[in-house]
Length: 321
Image 1 (cartoon, rainbow, N blue to C red):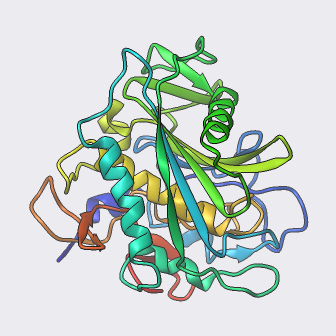
Image 2: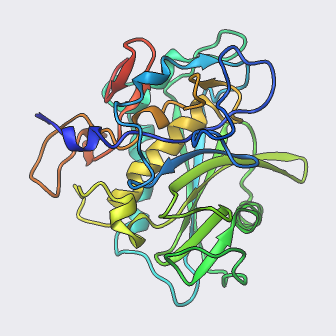
Image 3: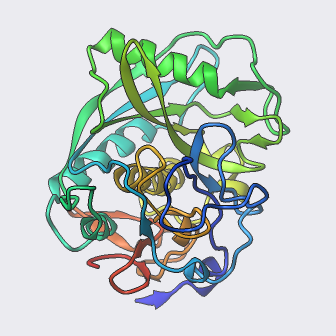
């Protein structure tokens, strides 16, 4: 085992808060950790990540009274329109990852166990209890670009992503509620922006948030294809030999943040950083050959995932608390 000091220096930026009675100071308007509009936690691109030190300067996470996911279910949507593609094992590896996380429910041996120290307003602690509801391949043609970014010729706005999430969920009979998250994985070469200055690859690699539609609240994550711009969103290690490895890392970030801060008013530090933000691009001790290093073995399979913040030990952890 060895420590990846280079990655640890790439710390984290991002997260979000909702207005209201807060125990800790909210992020200032000029703080990159603060959200734009109603977007919650982002995974910053490597270039946008500037806070070296592993998140410790923001102190421990503080509870702000909002809901958490005591248990959670996830669905995966792969939006691959005609003319676009993903790597050979992209869908199967991401689906396997979600299944592996669920298979190891209750174990202390991976990053998901760190969430069990956090709780809701009734004092109920989050359980490491995840389930994978299934996936859908979405072949709908892309709408006209709703934004413009510097890396791709087509760009989806957040409103367009939300609309597609609700459409696919309804078509598959997937119910939206406070314990279910929909991950929207878009194909290689498809960009997105949630504001004119916040776009995939230049600003972020993924983000999570929520919206209301038809009387239901949808928890969702926008997951651009990380290896569209490897220098921006790929940590450089592919233990499964596929582009999916890079996307799985940022998927874990957003999954853990939704579990602990689904609406942006539960657990974050005094800067507004959530548990994933405080450890973004921080991987800790690794095993395996260069280019295929891993730091997690979940249900017998290897993954390269960022660490998550633990209040119990006031640091980023790969397992336990």
